[in-house]
Length: 156
Image 1: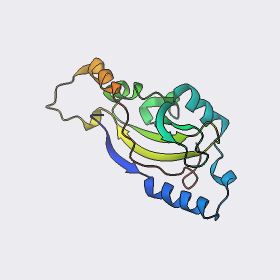
Image 2: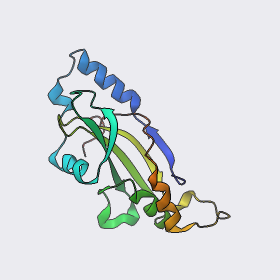
Image 3: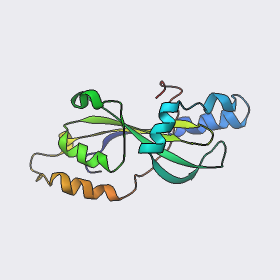
Image 4: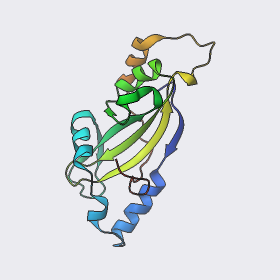
């Protein structure tokens, strides 16, 4: 997405947590504890991936995009489909996106990425291409850069 900035990748934290899980330092119940709200968000607003769950290996992971920002008011904290993000990025000045991976089979969940979106990233000399152009850019898949756990930072 054109206005994406301040990307934080949590793949190293995910790697450490999975290593601890496979070494027996932590149990499966500690990492497979997605709330019913998160699992429903994955079912209704999630984007399926081709990546298998690293814990159960039975199901593919689903990405859920949560949005937060002052301009969102009552919509802050809601899960949104990937296609909605470019439209919001052209209409709002700035908002934060948290990307969570979820396994619907075993309830594994991890924060994998966070970033900012919004018009504030556009330069004043760039022509405003409008919401329709932003929506057309959503046809591509989201680039998955890595993973991490919400466990260490607070739960969704």
